[in-house]
Length: 312
Image (cartoon, rainbow, N blue to C red):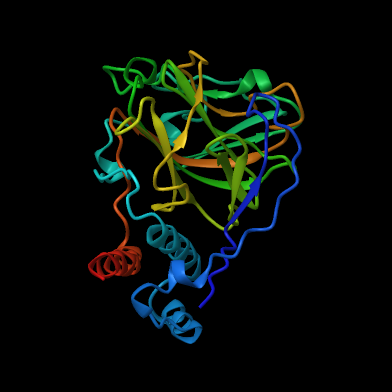
């Protein structure tokens, strides 16, 4: 069976700066049979379809198959091995603990509630709707606190940052969901209504196709300095890694320690978006999310394939 990934597309970029350039998205490459058909796994499309309808939601299956493909290709990758549910993170904020309907809370800051930067809280959900450029009103969690420490104090080296959000609208370029700095390096995760983008090793940007408007999705960015001279990143969408398991390289030499979300440029990127934040959480260590049972089962097949391959 030839596996052609539909979730990932790649676009070259000379540098990933505050003013994103326009790029041509290249067609995803077909992965040869020999990389996927290890131990002669006879997985038919009919079986996958049956599994989709009876056991695993289609969206999660797509993530899992993509991750399975990566798992079978990268046998010796340096992955984040420690798992933790977001409920154990040291710093956790619901949307209403960021902005309670009248003022910012727990060290968070951002723009005032106006017609062009509208803040509303429904239950624990914070919704931000912007019109035009709102660079000066970016949601800022640099000094957010759990009562003892703040992001700016704990983010040096390894960290885990997770956001549970629903995107209702963006312009064609999207906006910056995550700006995460750890004093010496920083990393960007950008989002549109149709996908999420992140830096590639050696330059450029990869886009993971996803309908971000169909409900709340979790995005976890993990900074991991294991087996690397500098911190490397891993990005997980709904508990499945969409980056290379070996990790990517952060933008270096920036001396940045901020935690931002929203319009971070003076250009049209980041203008006019509508997003709902269910929660934002972070911790001082590199934690991979705990996979759901369905994802773990399929990913386990990839591990079995690698074991059998090594025995041959």
